[in-house]
Image (cartoon, rainbow, N blue to C red; front, side, top):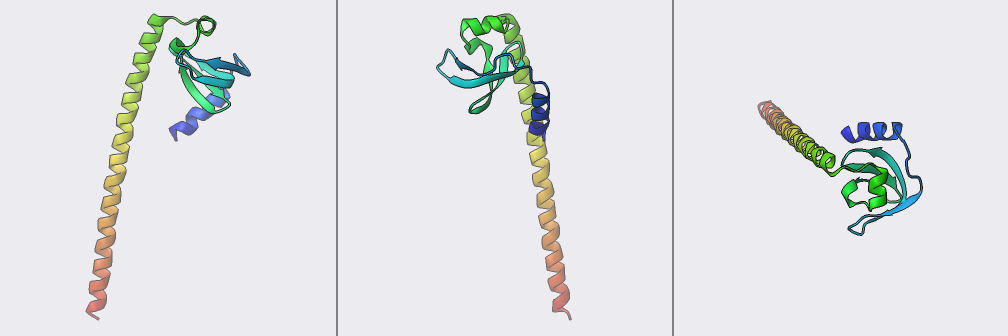
Length: 125
């Protein structure tokens, strides 16, 4: 569900800074037909030929870093905030998974009890 809302927001805010370019990061990853969706202090969200990606600005070549006003100090703060948010999201997701598993187990126990009660009822008739 979160991914759906993210995509809606993503598609609703499409400032396409770089349409149709190819980018190669400093670690050799190439993105073709790049369309910039969002620029943050530490990363650029893009759509490309292979899908989408969150590309750290630090991994972009200097001309692209300059285009996106890369500031290593701001990027470090933003990256830390992103990591904290992702950790919180992961913790919340795990709690939701645990709750769903608990509910499923409770339902299985209830179903088994109902089947057992039904068999016991037919055995006495």
